[in-house]
Length: 269
Image (cartoon, rainbow, N blue to C red; front, side):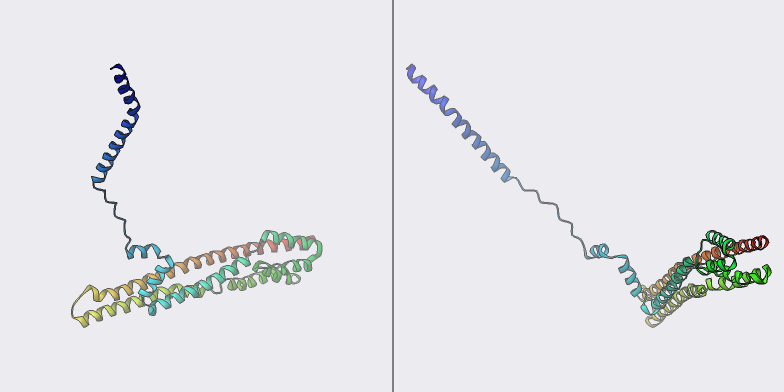
């Protein structure tokens, strides 16, 4: 009897891991079945981008300007664009010319004075002739009249200074013309667009937004285009005027200093 009990106990000890493993597998199977019976949550809907949103993101500044140009009617927008192109061409040419005309007057005066002391008038002429800019040209004209006296030098500088000032201001009248012309062309498009809108109202016999929207849109776009062109060209025009004023002041100051140097040189001879 004792041996039989001991055999049952030994069998229980040996079979306990197998029983435990079977229970674990049974519990896992039950959990899997319970999870399968639960409804699966639906995924969040994927946001769909509309065509309008895609177009808005892909549009560049260049594309927007192109679209507005077409919407404003090329018949009225083209003259405004021509004013912008021609005005910018003249303005850029003037800016480059004015910047090239800038001279270091202090350095030039020092060279002229040194040349007068070492080589005389002819050496000073060589210095001014080899220097670029209106100030050097005025100096050359003044030195060429040195033999006729200081009074002739001053008169020559004043006369040739007016010539150089006229050369500096050349082309500004065209920029001013385009500044005035661009808004006028825009306003003409405005008037024509409004006339077209009222013609549509008269033909339909009723005021409808769809009838007048096209004409009013053309009117507004052409006006805005003309004003933008005028503003851009006005900025360039003001820069050119300020640069010319600076150059004229330099010419006047340098001319006075040159006369003083010549008087000093004549007295020390």
